Image 1 (cartoon, rainbow, N blue to C red):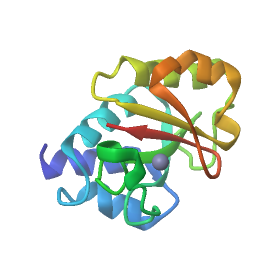
Image 2 (cartoon, rainbow, N blue to C red):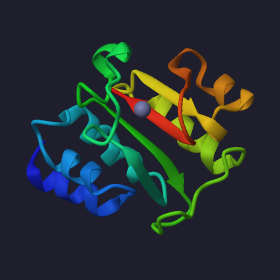
Image 3 (spheres, protein in one colour):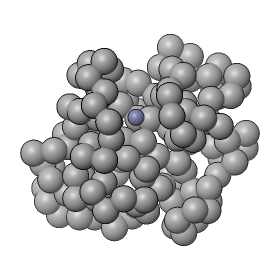
Length: 143
Ligand SMILES: [Zn+2]
């Protein structure tokens, strides 16, 4: 995965923390699998806000190889537009389509639902891929 691909990806994302952006630009800190999945997912959603990547996330080695600590996870929330904060409704059809798109990605190993995202219907939709995540409202994607 080239630096150009990483730059193209970060130009499509919104960030809550500048460290998330620099982590995604750094091949030593984030895996190419993660970049590949995010490139595919951002092509399918009007916007995606990244809430944490690696440097700005607490150690989560308990998730094993698919963790933030290993550079193989992001926390995020899908958007209705490229505008930061224009969050999709966790009970809406678009949000479910976002989860379904993650399910179709072969590289996605785990999808955590945190806070408001952790609804019964979202959990049911993800099946074994999904887990109840700690913390604030977010969707955790681990590859
Ligand atoms: Zn996470």
